[in-house]
Image (cartoon, rainbow, N blue to C red; front, side, top):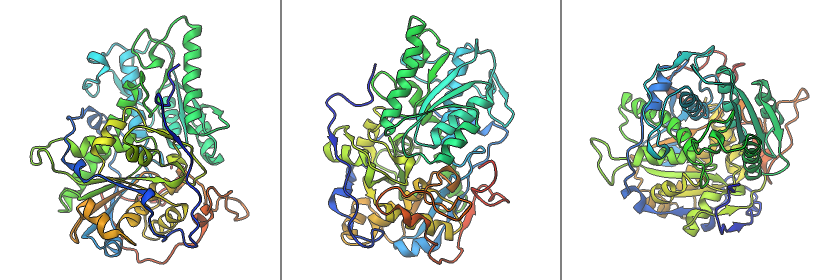
Length: 486
């Protein structure tokens, strides 16, 4: 079996809990920061664009809103700050449906007779070819030989997205859930009709268990199939993982392609309000697939950019699971021992092998943030009208850590940011996606804390003026992130 851990991986211990009495504002230590300004001079190859057209053709598709927050711009000493609010995406409370829908479409299209290019490269698929509208706007591929069970591991949002899309397509899902995922998030996956297997260990172990389950089915059928990602004789069980490893990178590649829709929307929304291209984009990072999509989008040459242009790209991770930061600092893909964090969707110990080359070459900087910084960001975004879970708010926590406090001038210089800079923060999930720290019980008690100071997530928000200015999709009339479908 192909292990997720790279050969000869360096395993490091999870960092200790912050000792500063105010972890939301304590100085950013050198071990929590990495910068490589030369990254913005690297050029990525052009990425396939068929996923955006596919998503735009879905009946329920609408761009998620882009919210301008002038008070954050004033706090951070920049020109404009926008937050991409992914609290409601295709009926789910996180961005993950973009990757899951495109990947499942590609798998089923191939099984119905469509083909991929040489060496498994994804070729553009004509939207509508072999696709019928599903009950909630998801594309249903006709002509698949037999029902498919899509198997995946998750620390929250990806598993629910795979389960939802599989159900809409009339297929099955089996989701391996890592330790630390909130019980309500697990119940939401089960509510999509998926079989759930709980894993008494971290995300990396859940990934291995999911891969092993697929290989066991293939062995019983006397040969590997589509589940291994090799493209050989089709198996009724297919691994759909957003983390690539050597020998399994084609399906994760499709998931990354699906995420590109998010960045195409940002381009159009910024242009619509006269903001132009961003100067910095902050991306919450787990295994690095969304960050890979960001690098691929912003580092590819455009008609007016050419090589060397584009925004600074900042990866943000929890201190308890900063595998990309550790890898960048070592110059090679390494694994870290993960700890507890309310940022459950980012609690990953090993970067995707597919993402790593792009992250190493194209990320300007990476920062690890404390639980207290993340908790403060959740509260502040909520007060400004942006419903965000701990993973989504990590982008604000990371930008604050980078642009304020001791050493901020040097970090700003490394990122190339001046007083007129435009920042885009990706808020990748709403509160419904990850209830850690929320008051969800009948007696008003917060769930059990994760991390040394994760109880800060349940504190009341700090007062802010309501200066949210949404661009794109209108807020849900039931309240963002609280609609029954969210």
